[in-house]
Amino acid sequence: MATVREGNKGVLLVVDVQAGVMRGAWEAPRIIENVSRAVARARVQGVPVIWVQHSDEELPQGSPEWQWVPELVPAEGEPLIHKQFNSSFEQTTLEEDLARLGATHIVLAGAATNWCIRATAYGALDRGYDLTLIEDAHTTDSMDLDNGRRIEAASIVDELNIAMTWLSYPGRANSVAAAAEVDFAAPSIG
Image (cartoon, rainbow, N blue to C red; front, side, top):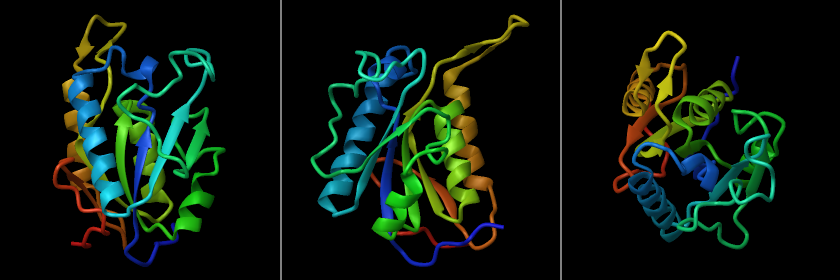
C-alpha cells in the first residue's frame, strides 16, 4: 500500500529530453517547445524543476546522444537524476530529492511516452504522489511490430493521456494538462 503524500507542493519532472531520444520522436520540435514552456513557467512560479537523464548501450553517458537537446538546459542548482531503467524512481536518488523538496505532486514531461514516461507516471502514483501529465509535452517513436502492424506515436501519446485522465487511486489525484495551462499545485481529488 502506498503512503499518500499530504500537502500541496508541486515539482516539474523533465525526463529524457535528450538528443538521441528526441531525434526521431513524433513532433519533437513542438514537444521540446512545450517542455521548455513548462520549465519556464515552473521557474517563474518558484516550482522546483528536476531533470532525469537516461543512459544505456544506445545512450552512453557523455555521448552526443546522451546530451540534453540544445533548447533545454538545467539551471544551476536544479537536481539532476541519472537513471538506467525506465522508471525514474528505480535505483536513483529521485525519492530522496522529492522528500528533500517536500514534493507531493509531480508534473511530468519528456520522453519516451511508452517507456520512461509511463513507468515514471505509474511509479509516482504507486509511491503516493499526485500526478499531472503534461499532455502536449511528451512524445515517442512509432513502433513497427513483428506481425507487420504499426502503432503510431500519436496513438501511444493519446493512450497515455487518456489513461492518466481515467485512472483512480485512493487518496491521490491524477490528471493531464496542457503546458500553457498546467497548475503546479496539487490537483483536487475527485
